[in-house]
Length: 341
Image (cartoon, rainbow, N blue to C red):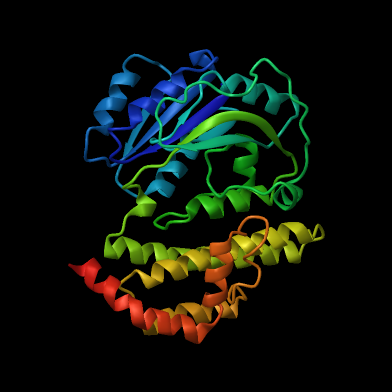
């Protein structure tokens, strides 16, 4: 079996059919790949929709589990996977038609541990055709993960690359469970370990931007969890950066980009803090924790990945700690009142 596709499913009955249909609209025999649907305790009709597909297609396997979050669901998928490669896709996203064979063939030809490809952000559900030439053989630049991060950059999410299952098992990398930012920690932990990674410049994935997704949920408890999980991600990244600093293959460009990514967690956390129900005393503890690991002030944030006028203006304000506390004191009561209504 060439590929295992893992879909964590929780209350996505409106979207899961389109995702599955796109995975079936590929230039692969059903014996070549499996679609592992990990039903994470859905309470809507997601399971019923998935079963309609699994009843007709032998390569669609459903595994039911108690709700444990997306990290837990993906880890279960890793344990069940049988393919040479593993791919994670979110149930509200989809693939362009007939792109998987090209991806797998190039990964095989270059003996890669990770192969990345292009993703298009959209609100449309009809971008089924790839803009790339699927009959072309592409020349790939094979490198290690540190060079890839330093020279090409990378997304935090997991739906824009496939992974060798043997490499994934040997790496020991798993998704953190019960926390957000699990993609960013997983992707970075994996990339800094790989010796054989390349980018295939084909238009393959569709990331659907929708209102009401987990990261746009503004329920007070959820919002606080995202704040604390941004803090945790910054702390974890500190360990990852130190591991590179202490290695024989120290890569300055990679470290620079990871520092920017680490401080992006802090930047967006500080924005969320202003619109949350958190107490000022807790905010000061968080900022002090970020200062202790040199993730604050935001002196490495601006650069290739974050360079717009808004980023420059806001980060300069945030870097004045007393000014940030004053802003919090002035505007937070308004958001707190509106949130609690």
